[in-house]
Image (cartoon, rainbow, N blue to C red; front, side, top):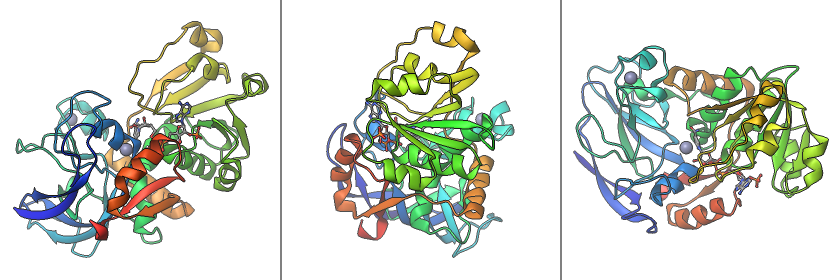
Amino acid sequence: MTTVAAYAAPAAKAPLERTTIERRAVGEHDVLIDIRYVGICHSDIHQAREGWGEAIFPMVPGHEIAGIVAEVGPGVTRYAVGDRVGVGCLVDSCRVCENCRAGREQYCTGGNVLTYNGVGKDGEPTYGGYAQTVVVDENFVLRIPEGIGLDEAAPLLCAGITTYSPLRHWNAGPGKKVAVIGLGGLGHMAVKLAHALGAEVTVLSQSLRKKDDGLRLGAQHYYATSDPATFEDLAGGFDLIVSTVAAPLDLDAYLGLLKTGGVLANVGAPEEPVRLNLFSLLNHGRVLAGSMIGGIAETQEMLDFCAAHGVGAEIELISADQINEAYERVLASDVRYRFVIDNATI
Ligand code: NAP
Ligand code: ZN
Ligand code: ZN
């Protein structure tokens, strides 16, 4: 075991503070990663404040991890010291259930292990990337291709894969009209990725404040959802809508923007249930779908896609002592477009 510095929430809703945690010794198939950067995902805030229910404290959040391999176990075959690597939301799974065998470890029915706020196979709580290092089984480590900076790559490990997966699943591409609700961490990645996939992209944001950014990131159109005319102008217009909103939405209004047979793929994870009039689906055979991050192989595919298309996150680099302030800014939708912690400051 090694003691390393980290930032942790000591209890639900408490501010994060500097502390130390123990990392396990590097096992046969483990990789020790010297963490350089970690993104702040809205999910970190939901969990640190117990917005999704009971959580494990102290909590070291962080599942958008990018760093350099510092040590490998004797059985490791895929990584070597010095490699550029990442870790996302998962650090283990049962590996034998139908979903694991199909590369959908995020839907493991035998019990997967979250990067933090989880319990490892050793029975110990897991601690995430707001720390100097992490030890992870090589099967849950991703390779960050050359050509993407580690800082702009970190958010790809959650925001990137969470939006790439439904865009691919629901065939975003040339000839498809795709709308993205919410231009935050996930939303700005959805815009970049849908654009790189060849779709015609529209941003549906609460206001027009970030319109210039949205167009620069790859959207062709940008509308304010605070303006009721938006819902009339765009009625029945989209093949696919990806919702990244962290709060309950008026789903009926957004479903009305889909073409016949269109899909609203929701990735936002609000703390409260939403209401739905099922006629919004019956009308025009519309589909409401959900999607949770992505599997390990698909995450690697996404990283390679990003490298090939020059896609990285647009980040605001912060020092660790600014984490609590950054949380408040995310909650106020004042993020452009992902806060990333410089782990050298932990
Ligand atoms: P974020 O950076 O805060 O972005 C969310 C965006 O939603 C905001 O920037 C804002 O964009 C919009 N928004 C916020 N409040 C709203 C409201 N009341 N009504 C309408 N729009 C609102 O958060 P994030 O990190 O992208 O995460 C978004 C959600 O996805 C969170 O709930 C998170 O837990 C969840 N998540 C899910 C998965 C998954 O696997 N499914 C993975 C990661 C995160 P505008 O200012 O443009 O309106
Ligand atoms: Zn996340
Ligand atoms: Zn499984």
